[in-house]
Amino acid sequence: MKIDGKPYRTILPAGDGASVAVIDQTRLPFAFELRTLASLDDAAVAIRTMVVRGAPLIGVTAAYGLALGLRADASEAGLDRAVATLAATRPTAINLRWALDRVAAKLRTVPEAERAAFAYAEAGRIAEEDVESCHAIGVHGARILSDLHRAKGRPINVLTHCNAGWLATVDWGTALAPIYVAHDAGVPVHVFVDETRPRNQGAALTAFELNAHGVPHTVIADNAGGHLMQHGAIDVCIVGSDRTTASGDVCNKIGTYLKALAASDNRVPFYAALPFSTIDWSLDDGVAEIPIEERDGREVTHLTGRLADGGFATIEVVSPGSPVANPAFDVTPARLVTGIITERGVASADVEGLLSLYPERRKAA
Ligand code: MRU
Image (cartoon, rainbow, N blue to C red; front, top):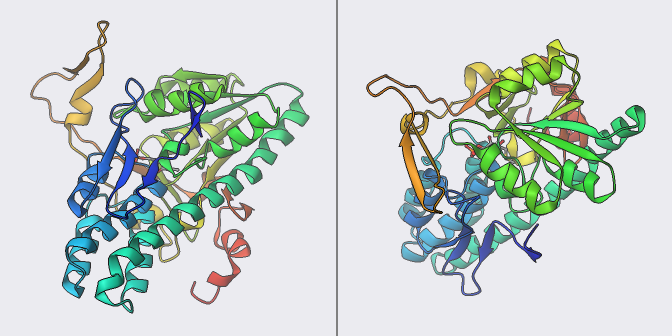
């Protein structure tokens, strides 16, 4: 996507295979800065501290991190250590584990001297596939928006949660891809953007993206969605996912479940948009089985933002000494999900729906 007319991706490989550059998402929307990752530790820290975030992007970053780690130690032990280090950074998004498993499995038969270059090239292939998948998600999802527009004869109001746009992937995004494709095709779309406490990915990142692309939008407090749905202000909800089970349970940023409950109560269609790498075919019951990342309580107690003079400041917003909890994701049961928008089309949120799009998984399922 473009920033100030210049095309960007979230992760930019270097010609010599010795590093990769990423957009520092902890600085957005107020500063646009690139960071260079040149080692396994650089990549692991960038993922853990959310310099890069979003399920597909952390998968691609982990794949590059593996390649960078192998430049220092390409032995079997080095490979295992790099995989373990990167896998431990963030536990919920399955894309990270999926990317590591894919690269590591191929590397086992590659001679040690060629491993780093092979892994770097494979990370690049994962990145390219992610761009293709996300664009295809956009095309399939845009049909839902254009059908709604045709039926209602007015601009369509979409509610989204967190950031599942191009900043969360390599390009295009998942939940925002249908919005970009529809907007570019002339379908009038307006987006209600949940601010998404505690880290404000909606207010900071989704709003930044939509601004840059010229998509009409309004940032709302997280608690406003139910009220807007009761008053007919939302036509459809579209969110991303960090892990979706074979049965269609959708794990996504904390607060997604409450939006799905409100959508169900108000008969607002609720879609999750995700590529195949987000589906965990080994799981059935998302609420019971998906590990939910518990992040630092400081994300709840403190807010970082820009001061009137342009400087940055972090301020405390919780009564000092009060205990806090910070679960980063929740699970929306399949029964609340109208459909799952994938790169292969839109599936019902159940085993048969997903298998109809991914028949090659039938044997393994
Ligand atoms: O904690 P984050 O910012 O990595 O969480 C991101 C989300 O929850 C996104 O909705 C999800 O990764 C889908 S991204 C296309």
